Image (cartoon, rainbow, N blue to C red; front, side, top):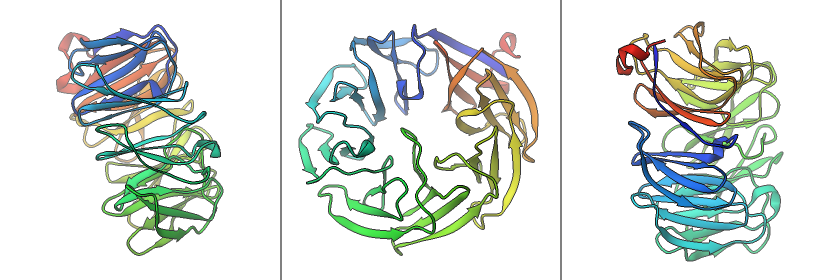
Length: 339
């Protein structure tokens, strides 16, 4: 069912922030000193540039690679060549990185700095808030950026090119938050989902300016945004599993248990397994879950998994402790590589 297409040593432990996947390529931070662009198909190197710094966040947006470094510099590189397009020195402890079209938003991490928007073509500052702002990881949508204070009672939509307040939505429970994790899930148009309280998910409509409770799991959940995959909402539990709910009415469909805490994305399998899903557990296995929520197969691939990402239809990217590998399901796997 699973075949390893390629594998690359990173010479560092690695984290989810060290990998960014875009339609035109895959960029990874490795050896604590370099950014490398790989061909998703075979793992071959397209370019390799020296950095010598730790990064906080990275995003591939069209033909640009945006990197927020821990020495408080934002770098824009050309995805095709790895050459610098521009560099901007930021305020100390600037965190969060969100790209929306031609605008890059940074700041607001832990309330250390103001929000700041820059033009992606030039690095020119479009606007900067007058005061420091404490916000969860923002999201782009509704013609602006959605922000909210951890533990707060509301979320706000601000203008993408001027930062002015456009809309405010009151939440049914306090806004849940986990550092460095995505807080909002886009579900189409101007609608988002966000974790609230200990065990709930709220649905936000920006056009209507409303937020209402959609899911009450009945058990403690990790304070990160739900994943909308395969027509279902996947809510990570504080234990070792997921609560899975219907995105229309919030009804809990099933609960899926894993042996160790799950990492990375839930991926809808594009192979021939009848509409199943792929998860990763921290113990180093990929789990294949059927359309009824039952774990039907475990494939051991490593001693430690740090991140799982969708790479392409029928393929996944797995970040392990020190290694990056790409795997394919079913017909995409080489016959000699099937597990």
